Image (cartoon, rainbow, N blue to C red; front, side, top):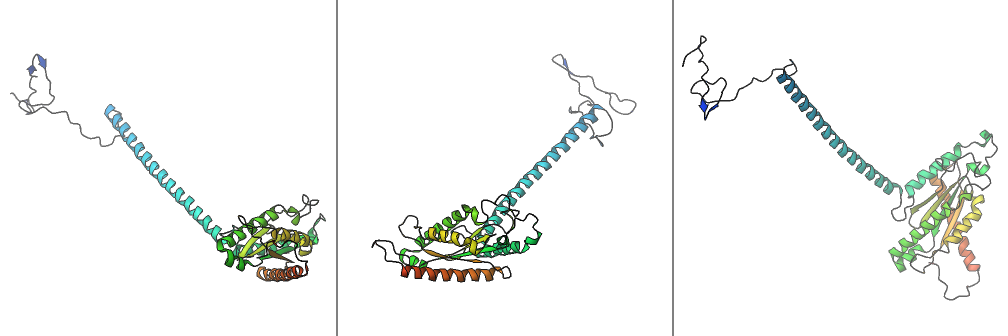
Length: 305
């Protein structure tokens, strides 16, 4: 083996194997053949050689992959946050439902009743007939009628037939009152002036309301009317109430409905006390009517509970 002028061994001739030439680059005589090694590129974005272009493509592709992975992670995180938000909103809605509605009948509870009555009174106080340029507003547009219902003998009903039957009686009354108000648009306005009324019936504080504040008590809030205008309708509702029979039984339901015109100078709680007093007066009137009424001809007629 001879050395070159630079001190490196000269390239050995390629050995022939079975007539085939084998060429190993930069391989000294007696050394093991190895692949050519390339130094890593210091900056793949400099230069235009084909090696740099390949490295540049690989680096860009790697960056795109990283960005796609990060976007996928953020999308997944966003989906998790969105699902958690939906669950939280559903939980809040359920809590609000429990906070403002009676769990048995689905009607508004006492807390919601006082809030809605306060809004109805506030709405009526804000109406000034002197500002009415159409001449359609009436005196009753600034009034609110409040009905208070109490079932007769409800404690005795529970004692004799059990709380399940008592609960069914409450649900029956709640359904009846809800349907009675939904089918009675003339409670708020007469058919003649319904379309021309300047105050929308769905305005805040102008909605009719049925609530169960406690036990066997029910309350009706009727904006834009008064007790005088509602008297006939209240008797119709009371008559319908006293014709009810507990679903699945032949047990009749009886109750009394007292109604008052709210005093706009009083609070919601004070007006509820006035309506409660009117209900007890009506209950005494009904007892007097039953005493003075002739005895029923049918000995098998169901007795009030």
